Length: 398
Ligand SMILES: NC(=O)c1ccc[n+]([C@@H]2O[C@H](COP(=O)([O-])OP(=O)(O)OC[C@H]3O[C@@H](n4cnc5c(N)ncnc54)[C@H](OP(=O)(O)O)[C@@H]3O)[C@@H](O)[C@H]2O)c1
Image (tube, rainbow, N blue to C red; front, side, top):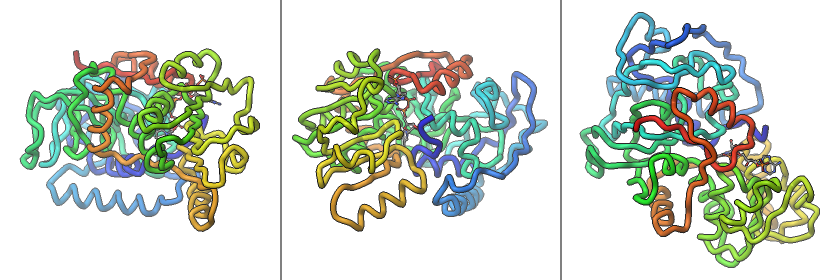
């Protein structure tokens, strides 16, 4: 497993604010309701900014109270039945089997949100990391919890302050708090954009988290300029398949993808000029220089990559471990090669940019498998193999 932190500071805020956000209705599991109480002895050292995020939890709870929203804990759900929508819900951390299809209340809308009928969502590794409790210092112990960040669907209702979307619009979004594995999701207008017209909901749901991560890693952290060379380690996964295409769009002169041999042709078809089979060759020993190494898998280090980076080269990792932030900070103080950690920031501008590139035919989704919501357990099990080729999609409404 490549890493066990969180996929972005927005996602962190998400996880935290979930404690104050969960709808006030009760969840009625289709199977037995497991224990709700959870231990709070999360592994130490995983989260450099945990205290800051805990403060965010409290601020979010306070904010929700001021807006008159529910701030109840999981126990509040007991004894109340409001079966407004189906969702994949967890009542405790654990294996994929803790995911249950339940009837829950639709989310309450804030004035700047859209209520979206979710046609499709997709799985990202952060989803199963949250499900396993690997992020419980951040996600807390309040259940039930709906996971999932990617949404493609149709707006059915808008909050009073929303002027830029209307019922009937089709949108795609990366939620700033989890809740996408459901028939309806509340989506902040700031993180939603019109769905690319050339994509189905299933294809569009594959885009937000993975493609925005790739874009922000290469454009913002890597500062990729036209004419530079890029290596993508983990080129055949959810983030990697978008990273190859985005590097091309941003004008990289030569793109090298690192993947297993079975995925080499796919990675070339996405725009890689060169493919390295990691089972046959260690790219850090190759001697070839790359202006940017984007380590999507996160299994290498700056010290291993020093010899393949030029003096001003940049190594970008997806793994936000405290030690990685520290190393990133230290390289800002010194001349020479830089170490960067990507933390996804959800926003509409990047979704609009991606929509433009998708509609221009320059970026596409690679969808490995599509599961119905009822098979969410199987979908998580597959994602956890870390062998998916592109994205795993969840089809919800038809
Ligand atoms: N910090 C952030 O904001 C952020 C955002 C998004 C994702 N992430 C993190 O980034 C990581 C990747 O996410 P993802 O969505 O791309 O995951 P993914 O779709 O599950 O990645 C699966 C891919 O990884 C490849 N892979 C596995 N081991 C490899 C190796 N040793 N060398 C090269 N490729 C290898 C597999 O290719 P083969 O089968 O060919 O080996 C497979 O295609 C996860 O840890 C995720 O949590 C972080």
